[in-house]
View 1 (tube, rainbow, N blue to C red):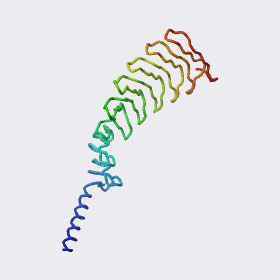
View 2: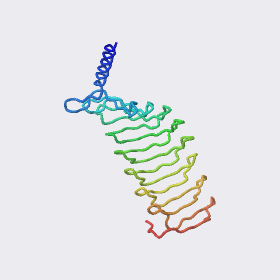
View 3: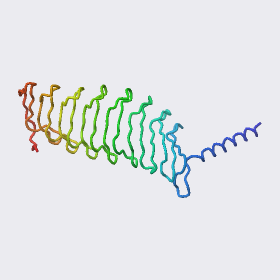
Length: 227
């Protein structure tokens, strides 16, 4: 009986070894070839996908430590560009866009995990937000805020809107800080407040108006030079 048990254990070991050899293989040049898998410390599969000559091929799937699908990357023939889909625990897509050489590129869209509503759309270049970043109202999908970016920092105009799409504020950014004229408006579109920012701080005279256009408050800030 002991001999049969040892034989059975040997067969299991041989089978496991042969099965393992089907994954995570490299060729004589050290390039990854064929199916690859990686695991968390708890033994749960972390990702699975195929390589050809060390480049990703087809669809890679990524999982969390509980085994839920976390993301997929669908690679093109070059193995350098991939369409990403990121998933919430409930299975909804919460982000989608392209990676090029593992960096975000082009338009990325982000969704609310509970409702599936579009929440954010951003332009990307070389892994950084570059272009417009647009935030949407989670209740009705109306544009709530838009800001222009350069190399990951706000640079240029920013606009904020009401739930019905009425412009409530317009200002300017420079190197990630509010810098330049800023105006806010009542939902009726009447001017509410206006003033100037320099390097993220209010400077000069700021005026507040009622909806009839009368100045109801005036305050002076700082000593910095207004551009």
